[in-house]
Structures are given as structure tokens and as C-alpha cells.
Amino acid sequence: MKKRFLVLIALVFLILFFVIFRVGFDLQGEDSWIKDSRGVYVKHGNPSLIPDYVKEQQDAINCANLLYNENKNLDLSSECLGICGDFAVDIVHVPRVALDDLSKNQCSDYKLGKVNYFIEL
Image (cartoon, rainbow, N blue to C red; front, side, top):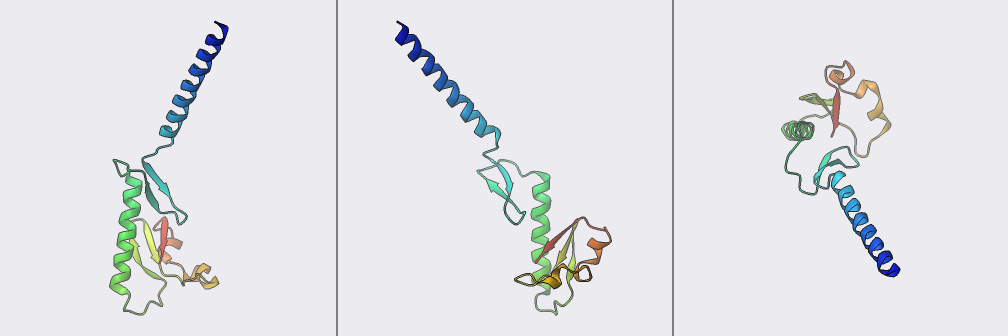
């Protein structure tokens, strides 16, 4: 009798552990958006909605790529391609060099606070 009671308690604890473990994963947002190592939002799972902050970043990246494609045949000695929403689009070396970090080589709209963020291409 005592043995059955212990087995029943162990079974209840296993079920509770499984339920808590499973709910814990759901609370972490299996289907959500996370930032990758570059700071770009990417899908994690299959989220049903795109939050405004993700949509804003995606639109800015698409705009920056458009600006680059329109100007890639021109002289890109200017460090700033333009503005996309609240983002300045900055041209940098690949790989980055110390010159890219100098204030004089950054977009003036970002330095003056006209935009809050920048995208580096």
C-alpha cells in the first residue's frame, strides 16, 4: 500500500514537472522574433504577427538596400547614402577599419540627432 502511494506521488510530480517544463517553453515565445548577432530581427518559430518594431526595421533595411542599389555605380566616397525612416544609411569598409569609427565619417543626420539609428552597408 505504501509502495503504491509513493509511486502515485512520483507520477504526480513527473506530470507536474512536464506541465511546468512545457509551459515554461511556451512563455519564452517559441513563435516570436529575436535579434541575431547583427541586431536584425529574425523569425523564431512561426510567429503569426509582425510587431511594429520588427516591421519598422525590415522597412528600413529594404529602403537601405534600395538606396545602395540605386547608387552603387556612383562614387561612394560619401559616407552617407541617405535616410530611411528613423535610420541613416552609412557606407563602411568591409572589413571595418578605424576610419569607419571617426565622427567625421558618419552621417551628419545621425550626429545631429535628426535620426536615432543607423544602418551600415
